[in-house]
Image (cartoon, rainbow, N blue to C red; front, side):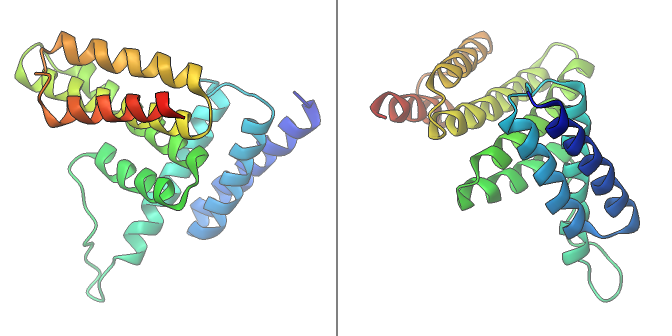
Length: 191
């Protein structure tokens, strides 16, 4: 790790946060993405507390931009989700479709955090099992992005986690989500 690069990334994180507070969402996103790329290129782990904070600010900026773009003239918001994780997934999907797998991983990871927090608040039962399936689907997306980046060992570990979650909630092997997991795993093995 280059200490100087990390310091630059931290300053960019603060600048991005200021852009967000001022309502300059595009500037915030560009600055925060640059910050995250510096962290990524220096091998700072995804679970680092600073990265988590900056990633969270980046998510807020993307959501604010999306809400701002979909505002009607009457001031009403068309872009609303009961579940913040679903909104973040949509942003991650956009980056995935653009081929920006690093950004997609950042956003899927943030959606995963939201889902894990929600699952911790639930008691055992059908609702917790559904949230566990959503967690597994998000992990599967992250694994897919890792395999597309050539990070096969990390992807393989994540796919194993997905399989264990699906088995723990007794998801049938013919369920579409389980089939999607198998398809993603098979695609990675062919790379």
